[in-house]
Image 1 (cartoon, rainbow, N blue to C red):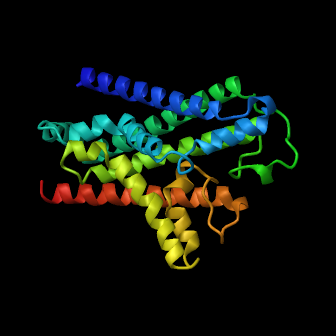
Image 2 (image 1 turned 120 degrees about the horizontal axis):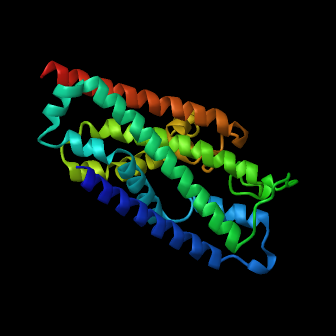
Length: 267
């Protein structure tokens, strides 16, 4: 098992590095370097985030980040030796370890990849500004897109926390999936569902329940301030990020608790 885990980890990280490097360099190629600025670097960085430019790349991120975060627990749950594991550590400890490792794995990989992308963009376009960049917020693509390094670092840390929570949520959802192959792609399937469904419902309901639907939309969690609704001000980005974090954590705990009760009942 450790050897298989090492191979999967290496493959996932390598695939993500290649995908992120390729997408980032292609974006740099389209930038007019003659008028490069901190704001252009910032614009390009946010243009490459979830839901902005490349659906195929988004699917890769949804899938690979969650595989990295919880593959060992998905594999263990669907293995013939799962009963032996439960006999040794119990359901509660298995779930606790799965949730904690998923969060740490998703958050850590997200943060490292964001910082790597930021370094690439700073090298090929222009470094972000260390000081305040006046009146640039209106020209940006997102709430944090103002050309300032500190603003983007804040975004990276919030997004990392969001990815960690999303990895926890995917882990709790895959507890109900018996096929490992389906569980592996659950990150992408759930990502697409929780990105599109709330947005479509918000349009159909003409703004009613927009706060709840915006909190449910996965981009609010993993890319705070990137996707907006007409009825929601971007100044409330952090508030809705906290709402989304609480909502997805509640869904995680509920799913894991129901699964544990079901298993204990039929054990």
